[in-house]
Length: 114
Image 1 (cartoon, rainbow, N blue to C red):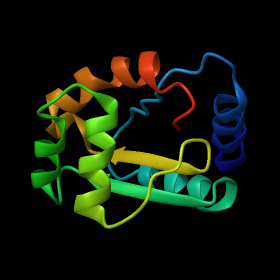
Image 2: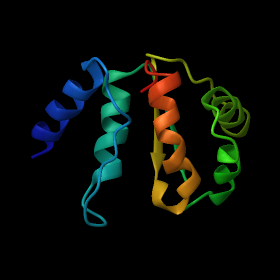
Image 3: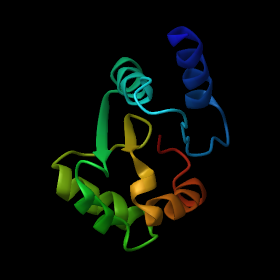
Image 4: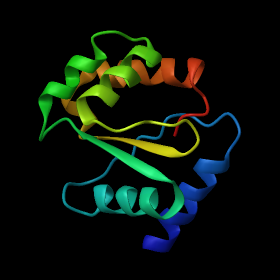
C-alpha cells in the first residue's frame, strides 16, 4: 500500500500544471507519516506546518498573497522554503480554513512550489 501512494506522490511531483495536493482519509492511518517520508526521500528539505499542534501558524494566512504567506512561514519556522526543492506540508489544514482558501492562489502564482 505504501508503494502505491508513493508512486502517486511521485506522479504528482512531476506533473505539469500540478495542483496543491490534499490527502484525505481516516485519522491515524499514516497520512502524515507517508507525506513526511516522501518529503525526506524526494526533496532537499521539508517544512511541516501542523495547524492542530501549532494553531498560531494560521496567522500567516491572514493574507492570500503566496509570497507574503511564505515569508511569514519562513520567519515563524526559521526555515527557508525554496520552490522546487522544499516540500511545504500543511498538516491538519482543516483547522485553518483561510489556508485552504489560499491554496488556489499558490496554484496560480507559485506553480513551482510543492
